[in-house]
Image: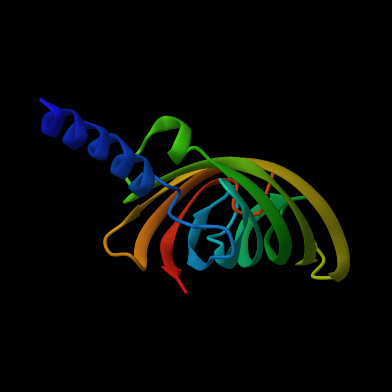
Amino acid sequence: MKKFILIIAFGFISSGVFAQAPLEEGGVQLNAGVGLSGWGVPVYFGLDYGIAKDFTLGGQLSFQTDNDPYYYGGNNYEYNSTAIGIGANGNYHFNRILDMPSKFDFYAGASLTYYIWNYDDYNNNPHPDNTSLGLGLQVGGRYFFTDKFGINLELGGNTGTSGAKFGVTFKI
């Protein structure tokens, strides 16, 4: 009976050890992929850093372009635009409190992104200095195939990749 209790106790202790968030304090991971938005297909590259148990801070660069035809004043035009986003994000990872296996990572957080917009209006006049600041919320998840490589899916709003983004994650 004592051996059975020790085996059960060891099982609970070891499951607590292995049910940690995939990115530990001081850990770094790189993320890259594509997104969905109301215009264009953004591509992004980001980095996350584990600052404390279950918390990460990160940065992201994104780029998107779009060419949309439209009708104005009896004429057909094309609206050409590009945007570069430079952002920071913070996320809380729910793995520990949800007792999730270490192959999964479920998180939610907020982001702040500075956008550099460049577009041509209906007279083909360039507007290179149109910038804005965007605050967004996101929820996402990752699945790790190995200890270092996984895929991610994130849903969010009010960012250049509004809607969703999908990509890969590499732990360094």
